[in-house]
Image 1 (cartoon, rainbow, N blue to C red):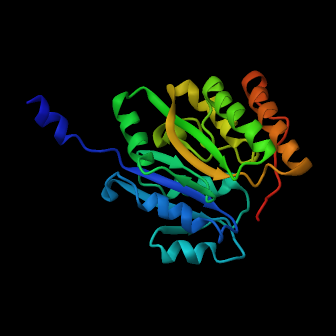
Image 2 (image 1 turned 60 degrees about the vertical axis):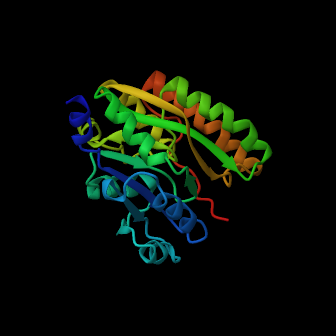
Length: 242
């Protein structure tokens, strides 16, 4: 009887939201990794939110057979809000268009939420490639910070949609480190789990030169500012495409 009850349980439907702006060079690899998941295709959907790109980002996504929605107001928070509005899943997973997820990524997220109803958000380890001097320094610090501060990186995050709505969704004023601001509110709804082995590989394009150094510093500063004062020091970041 126990086995029959367990096998009859419905899998959580996961909506994967990918915000994208001018990502024609990288989005195909991202979507290919999402389409090759070990999780049943009937139990998850892929949503690309085109943030008013001027290149072939939306066309490529459509050609690959995923759902594509246009969000004309530029900014990752607006793209994500549109993705949440279109999502059908009980769980919304988020990754970036310059990111490749591992084959069990969706399955690991879904199974984690199924194990404990008190879990409200899930994060995982993020790897930067190709390696740069700054990314080598930033990668272990960021992953440790995410675990310690209970923050999911935007390239590797998931949360229950009901909890997202309970806290009023994303703050439209915050585009830089929106993950930390969201985490500061959603952690009050339940448990955060960091899946160390649920890796994603993302672009290191932000970690170059003086601008890259500034990017490295703003993240930790904002994360601690959210933790201590519930507000950021920095609000926006420059788009980098190469």
